[in-house]
Image (cartoon, rainbow, N blue to C red; front, side):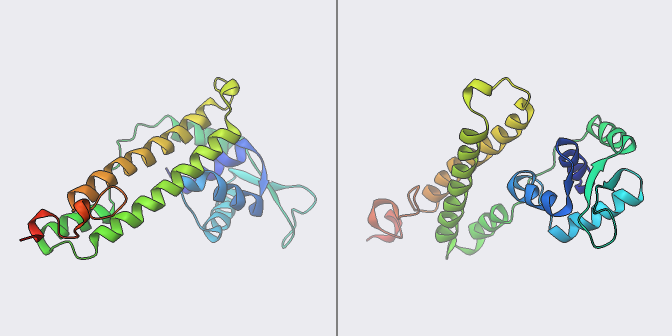
Amino acid sequence: MSLPHAILTALLEKPSSGLELTRRFDRSIGFFWSATHQQIYRELGRLEREGLVRASGPGAGRGQRKEYEVLPDGRAELARWTGLAQDPKPVRDPLLLRLRAAAVLGLDGLEEELARHRALHRAQLAEYLEIERRDFPPEAAAGENRLQHLVLRGGIQLESFWLAWLDEALEGVGGGPEGRPAGGSAGGPEGRE
């Protein structure tokens, strides 16, 4: 996904000022496509110059609040992009590489880092589940926001995967799923005589 297409999507959902758009990114799209506020404002300017969006409203002058809306060419570009075929991206996570390096170098500090990642993924899963509870109640599951809910469900399943994998990884390095040593010894059975 590219930032211009993320912005076009967000503006089609709801025309917004740059500030409103950056806040919406922080609360939704940013979970799976992050961008800084500066990147969003820079991209809005480029999209406006290319005739894909326009600033409207009483504050459309320089230095005043602008509300952006998608123009027909912007809608056409987003439709074109949405229809493209794209292969899945390979996973590039430094934690996986660090685990591979630890297989050669040793495990110093790795257990604590795995436990830290587990806590972060647990917190992210809790946040996603709260969003689902609040924004997608069961009675609205088949409503107009079903595709947005599907994106959120993907995030929930990814976080669930990472938690299960991290439990396995922690057990594999000698700790339990919560990062505590298995069997009460940091070295495991091999460390005892």
